[in-house]
Image 1 (tube, rainbow, N blue to C red):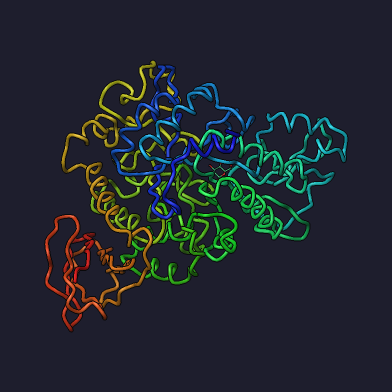
Image 2: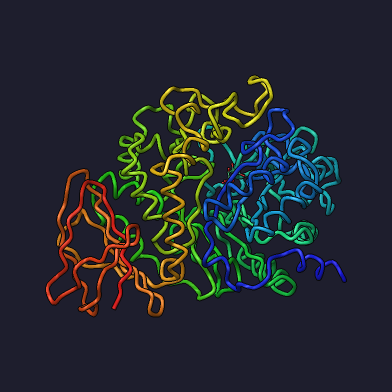
Length: 555
Ligand code: GLC
């Protein structure tokens, strides 16, 4: 067997277009479970918790960066693309994890931080000393002045003043779109493109099922542009995809392109770039809809989203490891969302809010459920951020985005059952604030409580799995006479699911226009009760505050 056949053998077979039915669980190895008691989570610990992950009903894991790194951007500053950080384990531990995940029919997506490296990466150390004009030097983007590319925005506005930094060794400025310790790679250099392909092959041989392409719009630079989404960047992605397609057609690329929907859509190409892309504009609009008690923000953004190539899929999310970004809203919407969800200014970071979902919702179970019901039924594959299934809190006193990356709360034992190390050795402190502490919020308690958020999540994901309409189906908004109610139909062949949600804090009544569904009986999914059949009149429903329905429509 050659390397590619071996790699294919390690991967899950069958299920073409598996990403369309993916339910993704995003986690940090560092913060999940510490098996060796050094205070830092590791691959052995994660492997030991796979049964838990499988029990949630997710079928894909997205791992945050686990590579050797000085960790000045929590691992997005990579110093070696082809190894595992020793704190997290070894390549053998990684392989054991992938194999164990596959044995449970769970796929694995890893991070490919393509745009930049750490300044400690040997490529950068070599480049700064290499002669000007040499291929080694040209791994990165250099300039004698710091005024080139002046139309390019700064992303980390709270920390960076320029996208150029002076390197005293190279005696030149180097280009960086993120932190100054993250020099951008130069994809005009074919050697760099080749390095990327070599890295991908390295992990493909271990059986990974997908790559999240970090910060993908910024790959290639050109004078007199804003250096985002250049045709050169799309050409590079087509090249990467063609290489992947030739040998591993079942492996997916997931684009992190924090852009308006039409620009993000370009990352699907004609079905020849990425298989998936995050829908960034939808995310803040779910929070907006709730705050405004109106279905409008969600309906408008999805109506403005054109259809995508057949084999592609959006990835949708409520929260992740970063700040809840408010880049894809207008300035007045941003101010409104900041006032609503981050009145305490310490919770604001760059153009966003560094909080977890449960604190954003004031721990209101009704609103947490409502948002997840939308996440699990709007078009796209949902991404669930570890800890949100139990309503974990955050710690805004920690720096940068660390407050939403604290250890998973497994039990009410010491260190939340995450580690046996002494508490001061932990990668990040456990949440101790009484409202959100591990004594109050942990997996063990919620597993034993049939009414817990955790068990609710499992039930919703179980129901979702039964209906391909929800993962693969079309979307049609239902006309209502009440703006507080968002209602839509998802349909795939004969499978029709009707969703309706009251975004308001007060009870509401609505009439739904359901043309073409006369005679159908809505069967409520959670409890199985049949509701009155749809007649010729618009269909009446009433709701408690923040209540929702999922119905299977039966003939
Ligand atoms: C992406 C990551 C973020 C990181 C940045 C720079 O946006 O999600 O965590 O800081 O890229 O690598």
